[in-house]
Structure formats: structure tokens, C-alpha cells
Amino acid sequence: MRAAPGAHHLAVLPGAGVDPPGDLVLCDLAREGANHVIRSLRRLELDDVGAIVVEDVLFSISTSAATAERDAPGLTGDAVVWEEVESRMRDEQALSASFIAFMVIAVLIAGIGLLLDQPVLIVGAMVVGPDFSPLAALSFWLFRRRPRRAGRALATMIAGIAAGVVASIAVGWLAQVFDLVGDDLDPSTLPFTGFVFDPGALSFMIALLAGVVGMLSMTEGRAGALVGVFISVTTVPAIAGIGVALAAGEAADALAAAAQLGINLAGLVLACVLTLWIQWRTWRSISRP
Image 1: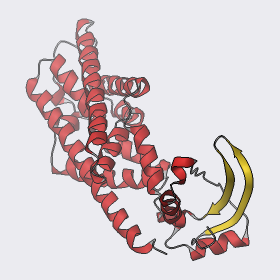
Image 2 (image 1 turned 120 degrees about the vertical axis):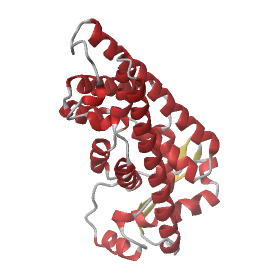
Image 3 (image 1 turned 90 degrees about the vertical axis):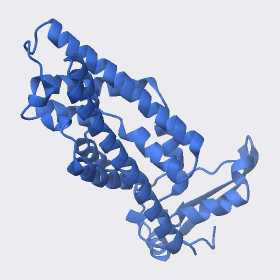
Image 4 (image 1 turned 90 degrees about the horizontal axis):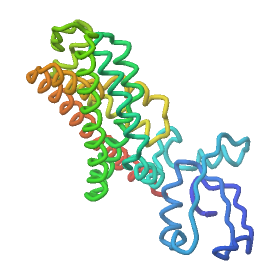
């Protein structure tokens, strides 16, 4: 710990551990030096006999802390703690009831937005949608070459898409049964939200840019930028478009919405994997002490 770049304020409490028995070692660590320290501790197999616990510090008023940050390689804002990212991705890949609930609600909002041709509702649905989480996990496990975990993330995404399509078919069918949108429901003629049924190269480009920002946000702990990612991509509206078009009997529009969904998913995953690879190569070269 003393030799690690970025480490400071080292404290040892001998015999403080009860179960398992052992010492408690505390240390403040600049984010840039975390990967080196965690790798060294894991080589000592401390994660097998005890635990390696990492907690974020909001701020530290200390001259030694400022010195430690200067000594650590790279910049704090660009640092990626890979074990932290891996732990987060294990949570993001889970097929939970809350994920399905958020997905269904987001698609329902988007479906109603398409039926009413209201872009405000489409934007709201994008913000609510949790679809980027399993996509980020899928990209991470593809990058780490973990096919089983990538399969779990993919299964979570497929389940969310299936639930969303069913929900949007239901809302489209109910809208026709109760005559909420008129007899002639043609999703492709929507002046404000018809982009959902118009896939193209620009959709792929936007997905690429959003994927880069989204993965940077998740790896560097900048959650605020994720809202912009949610609003940029057309995954949730496309899922809603598939169901609404099927409910209206418009097979061509359903295929167009499916193509829009496929373009967005492909662009997001490709951008996320490339971003992870660039980050890994960059930190591999500058984080060695």
C-alpha cells in the first residue's frame, strides 16, 4: 500500500476482524491508482480469505490527498475502475421484476405517444426506459469475452422487448376498440413521431454517438449524461411502434419499426464495445506504476 501510486492515509487495526478473523486495513486511494492496488490485493488472494471493499469518498480536504492524486497516473475524471464496472454490470444484466415493469410502462407511454402523435410523450418514454442497462452489460461481457454472462444480458433484453411489444399491441388494440384514435390508424402518416418508422443511416450514427456517451457515463460514474443517452436512442419508441403497427394491421410499418430497433441496438452495442476497448488500451498504457 505504501508503494502504490495514489495511496495515502494508511491505517491498520490489528485483530479488528471477527468473522473472518484478521486485521482491518484502511487506505484512501486516488481513483487513478485503484486498478493497480486491487490487482495486487487479488494476487494475494485477499478476496478469498476476506474482502476487498471499495467506497467512494465525496471529497477530502488534505494536502497529502492532493499530492497522491498528482502522483497517480492519468486523471481522476478519466479513470476506470474495472472491478467496479464489472460489479455494476452483474447487476445490470439481471432480469428483475422492476426491469420488466419499467420497460412495459415506458413502452406504454411511447405507444400512447405514437397514437396521439405527441413527441413529448415519446421523450418521456425514452427517459423512463431501462433498456440501456442490459445493453451496456451485454457490451461489457462481449468485450470481456464472457459468453454466458453476455447470454444472460441478451436474454434480459429480449424479455424486455417481448414484454414491451405485447404491451404496445394491447394499448393499440384498446385504442381501436374504444375508438380513441379514429377508425383509420396508419402509424406511418404521423407528422411528429413518424421517425420511429423511418430507419436510416442517421439513426445508426445517433446510436453510435449515444453508445459512446452511455458507456463513458457508466464506466466513469457520470450518471447525469445517461439521461441524454436515453433521449437520443429510439429503442423504446421502436418497440412501441412494432406493437402499435401490428395492432393496426400495418405489417410494413411493424417491419420498419423493427428495423429501427435493430439499427439502434447494433449501433449501441458496437459503440459500447469500441469505447470499452479504447478505455482499456488507454489505461493499460498509463496506469502501470
